[in-house]
Length: 246
Image (cartoon, rainbow, N blue to C red; front, side, top):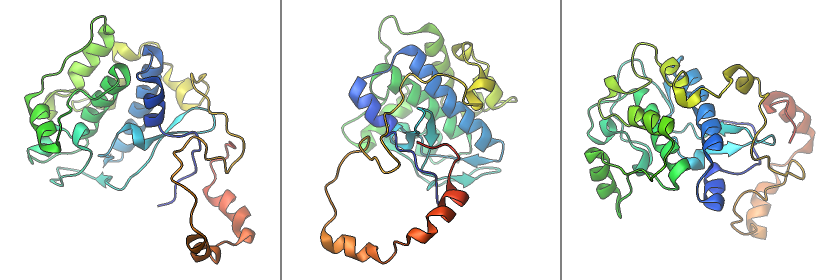
């Protein structure tokens, strides 16, 4: 799968730098995820691996949902155990079968992590994290935003049929929640809203917003050298570019 390049780094890195996000920023970013899920779910596609590492900033500060390695078209239920331990929905852990409803659970986890600084269910091992998830008890700081608290409580519901986003109106239930009252969904999807964080990208090859894992060895570079053909650059831009330059 080929996805367009997003050079602004991961939401994970932003959270690591800030500790946690301000309420308006968390609202905006969670709205982007809800919009992405709405699009996918209308096509019966479950993403199944939402986490801060899988949300990248583009050159204008908008988030892009990436990593569709676990994505699947689901019209009924599926039983694959997949995802990140802190984000797994209870029905996945208990192997009861799941569908797109598992994505809305992950949105609740993400919103909590953005506002608190860590996921609600974290154990020293994945198994202990699963136990905490199945117990379903989490704590919120004092003075936590009331609307956010209400939304999280409706997303982190163990029974999928009772979870927000999983009932009759689907994604509309989530997008119409009071937490998102300040969001203009039309302007968001037309990319007309000002972003709180806009990466300062120098050029199309600027990878400074990503962790540096060291230079490739000369041997590794030589292995890839014969795949480089600059004559295909224009074709690449035409067929895979977003039209939005960094």
